[in-house]
Length: 409
Image 1 (cartoon, rainbow, N blue to C red):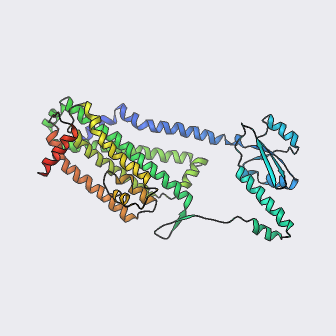
Image 2: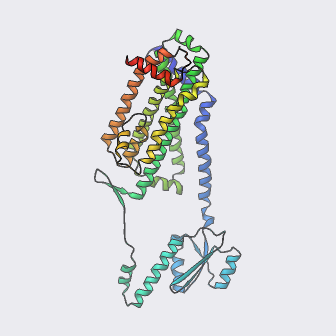
Image 3: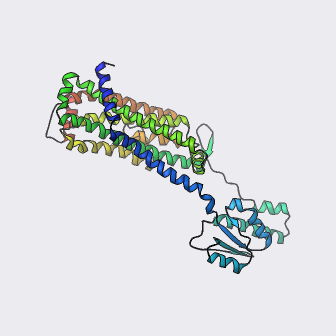
């Protein structure tokens, strides 16, 4: 690497790294996540005060069953056994509910401010009690009764190509979470940093600083220096989020919500996480190269939005398809798009984690994007060099197509 290129990379990285805008960009989502996490943590800590208390008006054997099942039902059974007294306490909001059991019928009465009561679990217990009573009436033994009320054991699994299976509920939640997070992360990072590099090139062209820079260095050095410098900022940005996420997990791993999330994402391996991160970084580099080409056609800052609009739209295409593909994983168009650079980064990682594609296919898609990035970067330096000092009144996309035609000729 030449000294000039090293200087441009360092200057580009340092100028943005020290700016308020960059740290506002980095810290705003972390601050928002910290606020949401703090509120969630506080709510979970106060859950002990929200356990509903209900009065069970029923025969003693039924009350005993509910008393023994308090923990599983997440309720407190009141000592009140008189219906009139229980309803008076309910009216005064001293109870959250009154359950009256009469043979095969039961009524649960609550008030508008009652804490949440697991009605399905209560109904399940009442159903078991009813079946036990009927079994006794029919003269069945205790063993026969237990066999009769035993629930059917239905377990759903997702079959993998290596003959292993995973829990379907955890897999579905993890897959949906990955589909959402990869699409959002890629799209947001692309929008942030393509706008950053386009604005920098536009500032230098509009202020005529570019002429001074190219007098000291070459267009090739400026081109690659800016791309690598901004890419370094994007990589640093992601590392900050990864480290922050790990520290937050280690600090709150015993929290109930964090434990549930961890179990839901148990199907996502470290290998896949590294693969997805690498894919996102290659996609960001690919978009930075494309943005540098288009930004070299800008005359002033007023054209920045015009330049990055088609790039933003292109990034959104993959983001939208990442949701569509969860319902149509075997669609031939989606299969093809999973190998197309600029779009595949939001699709192939999701197809891999949902077991629709295998690792060889995912690696091929990653390699295609990497090769596309190298070729576009090498091809684009000529367009950048020809246009970075030119000023045209034509629309940016018209200029780009004209340049592409000249390159072919």
